[in-house]
Image (cartoon, rainbow, N blue to C red; front, side, top):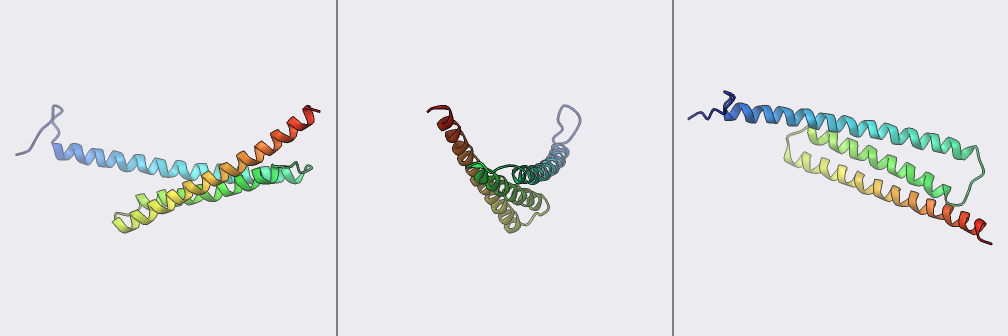
Length: 131
């Protein structure tokens, strides 16, 4: 028996359309991951250039290191997401998910380094303001 919904489409046609939409959305997500990776890498390069042109303030080294660590993590996440959507093999999907999650973890470590460096800069500023 073929189920027809109110729009004249069968249940199987509706499922197929949902799967196609899911694939399009996954491709868009993967594309956005790569856009983020390029943006973070660009930020890392620009901040590196900026820091090379001025006196180093305590904490800036941690911020710069954190940005580069985040860049590595974002690249790993983008790679993992891309691998996930390009395969149907369950083992390969699992490995790709591990890569994406590892990338997330590495990004978190980078963010923590940036926060630590930012805190050092703020503490130094407070010490200058308070005699």
